[in-house]
Image 1 (tube, rainbow, N blue to C red):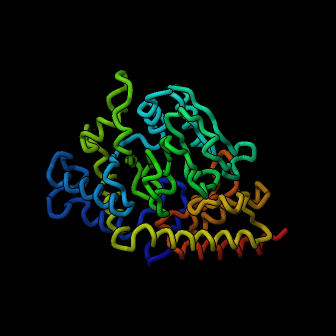
Image 2: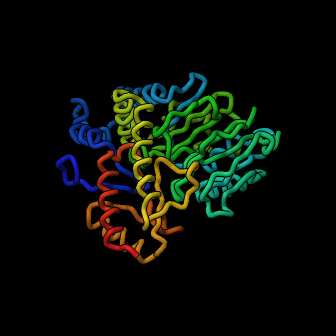
Image 3: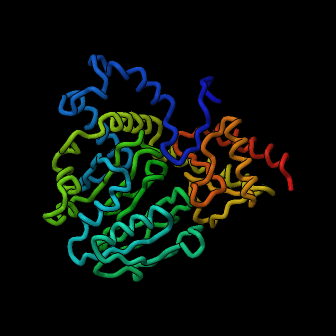
Length: 365
């Protein structure tokens, strides 16, 4: 427990923790937003009140990520999963070829979806070692006529993160940043398109961020479903139809908090400190270990194991009883995973390490 509230330490991979002060502010305005006499959940998305909410959200996101003027910002629906289809439908425009670097489950799904619409090449993959590392690629590894290259920057399930940005030359780089956006400084100009589901560092599930360079908009085939055309959303200010109003509002409150508390640089510093402390404990432990290559470890999703499946299960059960929730690894790989997104306080890491040390003492082999 912390902040004298009956709240757990929630290590869920998503939906994940939100900043407590944002939740409290939203709660205060839940029935009567800023004296309007209505909740944001009831408000017309065409009203002046909501227009201000969504415009402020975009403006503040542009500020904290230093998004250049020649990039569109869109608040969409369907999660990262819908983007697996929207990306190829919109970016297959010349050769109908795309090169994918496959570094985990979501990267795999993205490549499989794109392959339904064009020629997809797996340029590199870390599947050979159960996605425990990030493969190194060079410019010459990509096809010269590829319409785009796709990467998943941070791999939520396997706990890896690209330690470098691939050089793709003039080929647009598309990046799924669902589990790392807002956690570290990025240079938006290096990407043609960035997408991210909100439910890790941005806000509640229901909204997806898309940041897209202007010159890539407007190339989808005429038979593309209207809603899957980025140009429709860009031209209509993310309000072609009713957007996920409440999710955008909460995300906007998170953007305001980031802006007034030192920006992304401050968050990255705190995230690196949290992750280092936890990895240092695991690496020095006689019971726990992390299977991920050190240089490729995620700041957001720390995976670890005891080497004994039953002991792993005992750990997660005992942890939950002690107030540390959602530490079980993804069902596909087991083990443990601590997702330590922006809203996880440093005290959560300290308390978790204390619990792990006590568990280790009681379960020495």
